[in-house]
Length: 82
Image (cartoon, rainbow, N blue to C red; front, side, top):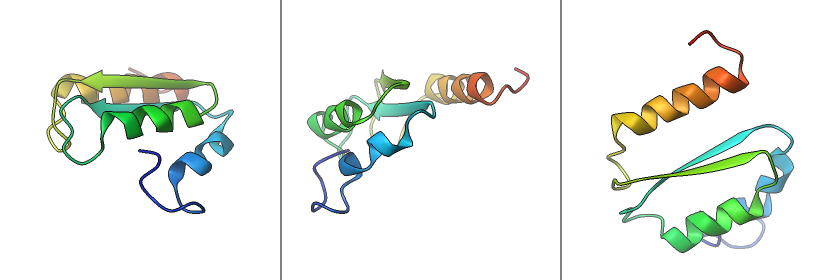
């Protein structure tokens, strides 16, 4: 998430530099570690192309469908066989 670290080391201050590479942000709706506001702030700090996915999970228990979504993202953007 963004806004969790001091200026100069906060990921929100650097994420825009990742563009124009595709970026996938995977979030858990019941995350006990990263607040939704911080995850959304990180998304807002990114430049396109960026996708943000939310899953009904906790920070350390993403469901299989999340892993499938990550694989599909990588397969698409790295031109891998599915």
